[in-house]
Length: 290
Image 1 (cartoon, helix red, strand yellow):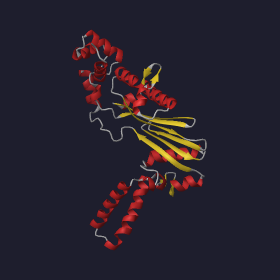
Image 2 (cartoon, one colour):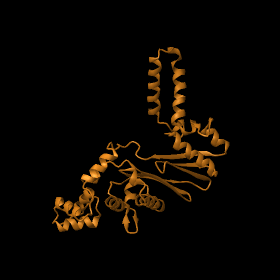
Image 3 (tube, rainbow, N blue to C red):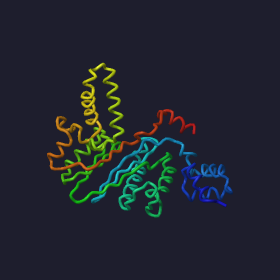
Image 4 (cartoon, rainbow, N blue to C red):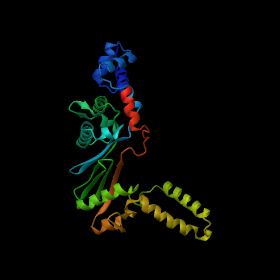
């Protein structure tokens, strides 16, 4: 008897579609190894065990629709595939489906159906047809009200994408803020957003540095506080120097326009993920020697 778990396992190994996997298992009387071979012989599975590969390239994408916006990251193994129209279309389809549904978890997002096929199945099918491991890494759905505005910015063809929400209605200011977030990599909105543990860890590091420099012990608290201010200027959006006018902080720029930054999301493709170390020549040689 062919079970759903058997079909799932074969699908994960080969990247082939659910129906093809079921047929392969039926044709081979449930023998997993023979089913993999059957799929490869039929040209349905381009390579076994794509799930073990590293997919740290890809595309980030943001879309705004009325008072809702979504930002997503979908990964591929190579930058070449990230520019493939089939891949970019998949990313847009995922973003549109999430916008229309309002889901909040990855589990629910993967179950969304587009023209009778779930996003999970679409990713598996595209993995088979494109020939690389593809994965839907993350998303964030953001809502605003009528007195607020979204700012979005895409850099390097979707390698870095940002989404900001501001109180106010000036779209140019919102875009400026989105560009700031892309360029300067803030981790937090303001000082109050930085977790206490992170602040205390930074304070301890700065204190030790100052002590190692042999500075006056009586002046250490003042020196550390000054350096902590520099830390805030690096990691907090509102404390950063505005990229278009560095002498002015982002907070002052936004205030001067009668607006206020409420939140932001910054996606950089592959950040924090293990990267492939193979070079292109090795990859081509592998394909030729198949």
